[in-house]
Figure (cartoon, rainbow, N blue to C red):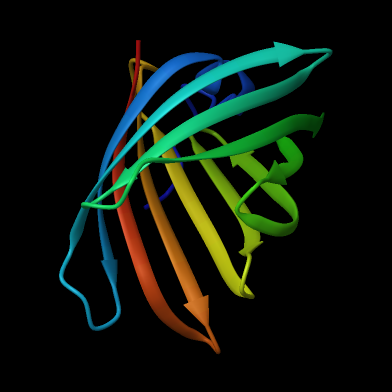
Length: 144
């Protein structure tokens, strides 16, 4: 799907405040699992600090944290507590592409598409191992 020129996906603005995501996670050789993500983001000195509570199927909730900073127009760099190394991102129009490596060595990419009203984002995350897609998460994120 090609990016639309507007609205511009500003990751810092979108994830500041409260948002909730509902998703389906499909991993290799497993049935799809419901996932709920509750996020609260604040900005300090231009850096987004995002705290998420993730409820995956019947597992106990867990927390993860992100930091993200716009390094140049439409380009982002940050961290994720579930990742090894940096998170990088690039926005083009209403789409945001994030790349990182999960702990355990799983290359991961996310494509988020901002809705025309700017209050929702469609997220598709793909996790790979040895070039094979081993997990796909499809999520609808809604901002309060």
